[in-house]
Length: 303
Ligand code: C5P
Figure 1 (cartoon, rainbow, N blue to C red):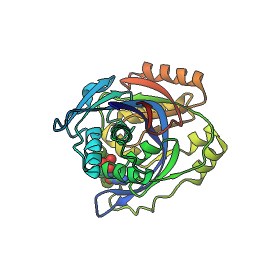
Figure 2 (cartoon, helix red, strand yellow):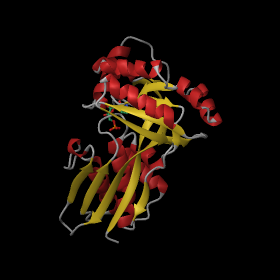
Figure 3 (cartoon, rainbow, N blue to C red):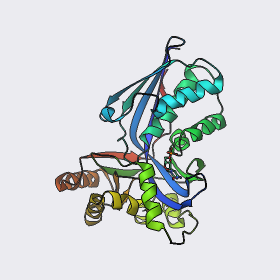
């Protein structure tokens, strides 16, 4: 086999409950991840031994993605090669469909896809547990990108537990020209919560029950994100976008992860088109995309 292509999804957090900073700098959290149909396709190709790892990025957001060894897909391939004690020279091609630095875990999706692709390319036959371990070492959101669907994340987000969720959900995402750095948003969260008592993060029973019933209005009403105020403190325009969702058709409006992408849950395709028009006409965002969820985790589409 010479190349393997794997598709991995972006995500939105239906709930993101954040606790205090831990000794290692990470924050303890409880989150409900939901994978959506915005994908990156990652191809890992054999390269001559000793030639190292190269990265090429194509697609809508390609110019914002690093092509050196700071790229999370390159780190994933390197980590797997180290683990398997092989040369690990490879050419990686990423076709980006997930907005960059938007709080939708596009880099994590690339890492997850690269792990699955390299595992197959090199016939390593790693177990799900092995892949989960390497994934967690690469970033808090990478194990979920392997898993997909709708699932609970605990710890720093890397411990994934499946949850019962039914139904299809329609989403509109409002994009920003410039991303937000995740550590900067967590830093703003720490500043905003300084001196306040932070309760231990816990799953919202209201949200879990709505997901169990496939009740989209219930899900929309129960969505919460503890990083939202922090993201707004760094990017005040986000607040105007969220209130547009509340004013118009959205069942729920939320900052996606650490932002600045805003996610609007809507009833159906028609409502999605209406929401797109409202957001585009507002001039408050640089672009709008539609998606549905839940979507599959990283899976081989070629090779
Ligand atoms: O794990 P990942 O590399 O995606 O995290 C990026 C940054 O986000 C971390 O360096 C940390 O600043 C912040 N973070 C956090 N608590 C988490 C997850 C991420 O503080 N649970």
